Image (tube, rainbow, N blue to C red; front, side, top):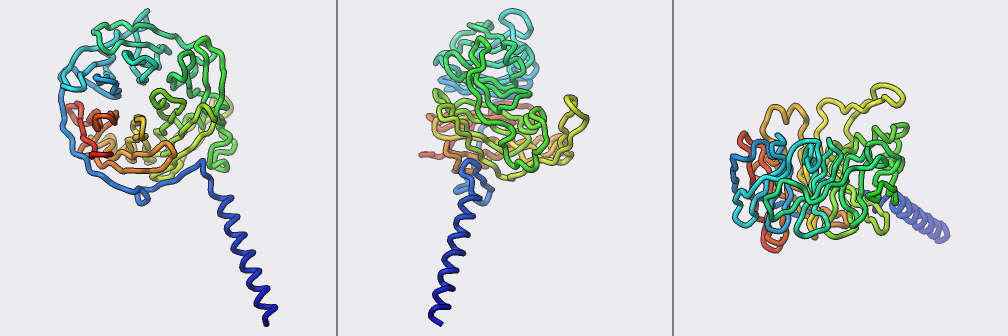
Length: 362
């Protein structure tokens, strides 16, 4: 009996060790998952709205130093500048067009490397333009045209003083760093590595990139880059120095259903009807990542003025920290961590700027 009991104990120890080993193998520290139920704290925020007749179709925004830069979808003019302290309208920026010093659109903003300027990426014209914050000039101080080697880049932000980080429309690599002269100098991650691998087997780089469309951002003055998904609720944090990529999946942790239409190089990806959009917008502070989550499908967005009323907040280790519940719907956000303010462009009939105060010691 004693021998049998000893054997049973040994078997039990072996079984427990095996289960622990399996658990360790299954857990992937580079792919974190969160849900609404696992977020440590939920906070309700109340806003004040400011309306400006100059803003006809405001969309994206950037907060830098004492200024708020707002994208104008009508492109006449491409951008507007507000005083962050007084919230007064200051002036417009940019001239629309394809000529020298003109921009086709203000698709994305970037803090850049100079304290007194900001950069705007024009997707249509494939240009990257720097503008002064403190003057009322419409002309950029400098303008960079995309070279042939990275002409298919659809996201573009500064990586160093002489290179940019991009996401390409069709490339095996997920992130590519280019010199301004067009030389490819670094690659980070591949599409064949992305999870779930079984579900994406046989899907082209082009179609995987399409499924994982989003916004690429750089943490100010750092080697950290964050990509936030529009179609899939997935955020990736790239460390340029180490090459490591950390993914945050949630709150739905859902790969939208899709089908591939066509064959060969002409095959395209079509998202199934009824699938919800993921993140509408995002911004990066020195402390946190802020993701404005939509969670609504195309029909819901068409039949309502409600776009996004929730902001998920993460640290740069990929941990979910807060859920911010907004009292009005927004389409884009920017956060000033020093003053404790969250800014957003509203989605109502007369869109304007909403300003929220974050809690003390946030």
